[in-house]
Length: 394
Ligand SMILES: Cc1ncc(COP(=O)(O)O)c(C=O)c1O
Image (cartoon, rainbow, N blue to C red; front, side, top):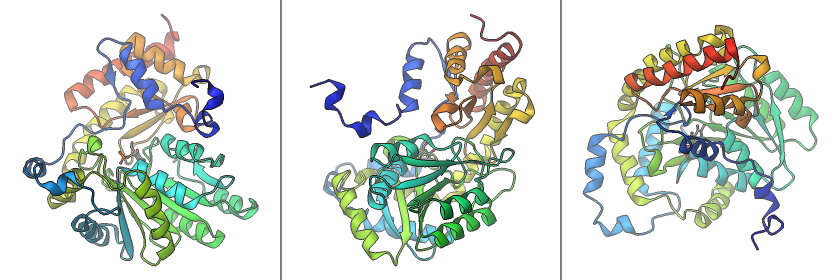
């Protein structure tokens, strides 16, 4: 029964998760330093964790809750959406993280055979969510060669020329793996293009507070738009698995269908995680922004480490926790470079092929505190210098 012929073609046709491959690679090493996984180095707010300790014996913590999320949290999120994101007409569904939210949406919005649009370099888990649900016609659009911003002219042409019209367009703002953001006028234009074409726009705002150099993150709202958010990086809650979907309050049918999916996968996000999220919101955006400020130094350290590749080959990092770097032409096999860096230099990054852009690497600057970041960056710099001057010597 274990033969591949007995397994679903949808999952067999789905990419291998890059992070599981990276974890396997790390297990082969002694003392690796990771600039790979998209994580932050902080834990949730102390006060919030203390409050959670008090509710473990509360019977409601161990019971199921409403599919959409506990009312107190949904209310707090709606307030946050109004005040911070200028989303005034949005309803909320709480999910077990933004990845689960995305799968919910693909199952709610797409049928087998539909086409969808993403931009290169894309977020690998979103790509896999389409693949594993049978949405295999994934049209990948270009980013601007310099800024990596999604190419809106291409989108306009593609949506008008592709028949039937693609069902969903998705963007990540600011981006994973690029670390670039989508400026407000461009986001509005993408939204208008989708609206005119009659297709959904899903915007993943997982890194909403991770903006640097005075740039501002913004959201768009409309009956064709769904916004995703996550507590993972913002409040250091990766393992608590908490995210949410914001959708137009006018979409009655949409909510009904969305609940079907939710009720069959998590039923509800873990109650204790929802409580922690509620307490974390009491600390508020300021708590997150303070920690994000501390990442500016990390970004500088990693940027310096990438210099051997040439400044012109290092992009992104305006937002999120990533820099995106192009490898020398003769080293387009990025996974080979990643393995070599790991084994010879003890530092791990993510290969661009996982995001549809071979010949690149994604470097995360969120997961280590400054001192450790310096040590990891030193390994990276040495490795890249060797790569550029001597190649992948053993
Ligand atoms: C763009 C983006 N969306 C979603 C996720 C997953 O978030 P969550 O932990 O809330 O599922 C990540 C995590 O790296 C991400 O980078």
